[in-house]
Image (cartoon, rainbow, N blue to C red):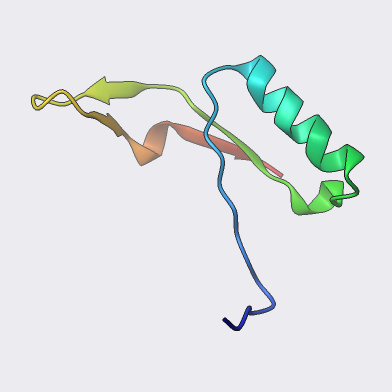
Amino acid sequence: MVLGQNMRVVGAFKNCQDTQEALSQLLVSGFPKEKVSVGQVKEVAAKADGTKAVDASQVTIAP
């Protein structure tokens, strides 16, 4: 497998505390802070089939 220069990883967490723990572990392991962005979903809607959908307009991302 060949890895390019740009790579993205996404994590989804149930609450703010879990997010903060994951971020702390990244930083302690030496991951550069300037390479991390944190987003927050403001609203998740339940679809008729029981699955959930996120409206992209309801997502905020901080550098």
